[in-house]
Amino acid sequence: DAKTTQPPSMDCAEGRAANLPCNHSTISGNEYVYWYRQIHSQGPQYIIHGLKNNETNEMASLIITEDRKSSTLILPHATLRDTAVYYCIVRVRGSARQLTFGSGTQLTVLP
Amino acid sequence: DTAVSQTPKYLVTQMGNDKSIKCEQNLGHDTMYWYKQDSKKFLKIMFSYNNKELIINETVPNRFSPKSPDKAHLNLHINSLELGDSAVYFCASSQENGGVSPLHFGNGTRLTVT
Image (cartoon, rainbow over all chains, first blue to last red; front, side, top):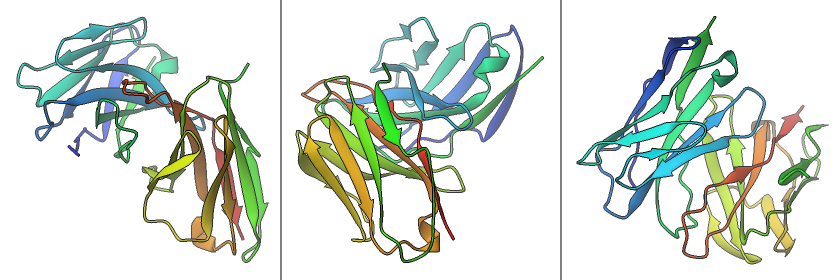
């Protein structure tokens, strides 16, 4: 299973876009990139996932590089409620073997 | 209408006791999981059940035993609790059936062993 690396922490001003990077240089062709976040004292929450095309939903956008070795999660207009730990993981389609989540990126949205 | 619910939310007990944590999901998913989050915030998978069958059993002490009475429930029983078992335990579910279903997590059970 591929592993991911993320910066330990980032700050973002409220109302600005938050861009969270993730490296997954050993990702396989059949592995998807998933993003979750964990707000303090809550269970992790699914945000978005993708294979190779860029994806957008009501929460965020996911940009995956052409070589698929890295991706960026974009929160277009960060709010204080977006302060959380953001996790990037990869997994194979149809595999029930969910990876251990890494340490993630602590995003702090500043007023 | 909580999707994945765990009980209890907090559990304080003494070393050597046996305790259980219950988990139920109403999403109709076919796979359920138990994760452990330690003080360093790493989330590690412990067990995974697919349609009541154990499919993942990571390296955890055999004092931990999952039990799945049906597809919607996955309980975690812990025997002879130790100080190092103190952590937050999360239940999750997903629909695996060949798809790419994301995980849906409960809000966790904070276990404190004294």
